[in-house]
Image (tube, rainbow, N blue to C red; front, side, top):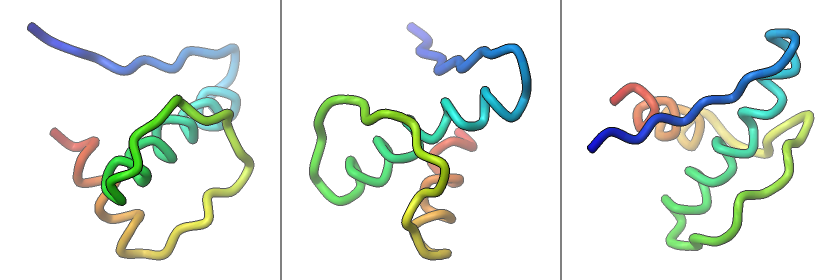
Length: 60
C-alpha cells in the first residue's frame, strides 16, 4: 500500500500555500497532538529544528 500526499493548484505559489496544511499537521503529530487538518497559513510559526524535522519526515 502506498500513500501519497498531493497538493495541486494553478500555480506553484498556491500549491505551496496549500501544502502548509500538511506541514502544520506534521508539527502537531511530532508534538503528540494529532487532529484535523488545519487550514493553510501564509507563515508557519516554527524554528529551524521543527522545520528540519518536518522536512526529514517528507523526505521518505
